[in-house]
Image (cartoon, rainbow, N blue to C red):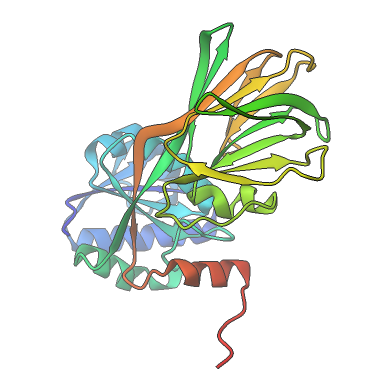
Length: 291
């Protein structure tokens, strides 16, 4: 596929990212692309003639956005770019790189593949959290990986009830609960003992955090379900809902958090040799074949 307008997004004040961004500019200029540079990285680029713009503008105008950094930078960009019909690919300049899968040492070859249409494409769904107080809407936010209900204090329990499509599931005393997408199943949810879900699954995983019971286990539910978390009135204040560990919504005792699939989708582009199980083996240090 030929992209005529490409946006560059990345990690500022990082030498590795600076090198990769300037390599990308060279590759895109060879292909006569219009290059849009997200404002926070304008000082990283040697070419000062490029157009500087906001992330929303990249979403509106670019057919392809390239994110240089770790998964955290990809998540931040993805929450915005998912509102637009923009393909997104990542160059890994972070630690794990579950979402940023272009090797910095292999940018030229991988960019050539992308412009030749030799790519693996997929759409990842997001979640949306809406907070209600006495049935009045208070706040909303979205997440690519997970939405977490938790207390604002470390190692502090809270009480809440969980409903799936208005059906009561359980009441619980715990540090909170993680509601994760398949994309987020290899992130915080995994650390909490949740299962790994293949990205193509239309499912959510619900992972209790340090529940005060021996019988509580993660549950996998249909992603089209509405998840309702009713915060008990006996809780003290300082309760929170976090979206991708980035955006935080404050809660009061008695509030309800209603979580459902967002209408937005993240359109990811992977190199042609992308293999999800290879990613898992590499990033999670799984054993290789015996022979």
